[in-house]
Image (cartoon, rainbow, N blue to C red; front, top):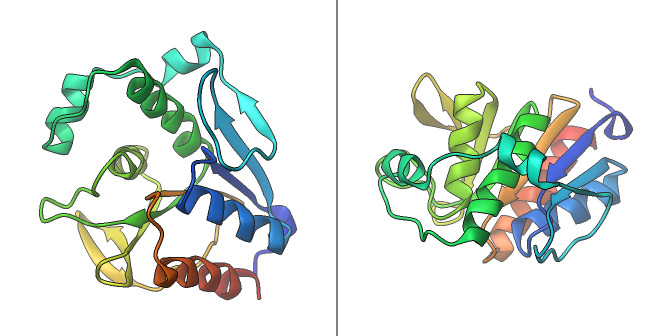
Amino acid sequence: MLKAADCTLYSGGHAGAESFFGECAEKWGVKEVTFSFEGHYMKREKNVVMLNEKELQRGDVSMEIVSMHMHRQYAQSEMIKRVLQSMFHVVSSGMQVFAVGKILEDNTVQGGTGWGVELGKFFNRNVHVYDKTENKWFTWKQGSWVEDLPLIHETTFCGTGTRELTDQSKQAIEKLFERSFG
């Protein structure tokens, strides 16, 4: 079994899923790194790595490409672009991606969380989503979502997801840490 103290959680520190992943990481003794940038609001500010302009540019992608790939339109605001750029650093740092959200019929995940999930697929990471409407974990395997009960099995992983965290979603995150490190 993997030791919690040997692991690192990467996130963006947003309210909801990201801050709750951080709380669980702290409880279990998992190291935590939070990526941010100037002007970015975080609920959880533990071990913050402030990304400069050059670092943010490493995660740059056309909003048209994001919108086309995600099958929906994203606002062209600079803040959204920065959040998506910082998500590149979160996902590329972890070998597993854990997200909380809603899996849509087109196999993407609702909202900005979806881009982190898609990056995980692009980077060939182990990608797991707790669907908060189904109240079940799913893992991306061979091009589709398969119901699963994942474990943290890599020393680096990221936690991301919706701001609107349900009680069931919180329990699912807590149980993930318990299964993995308890």
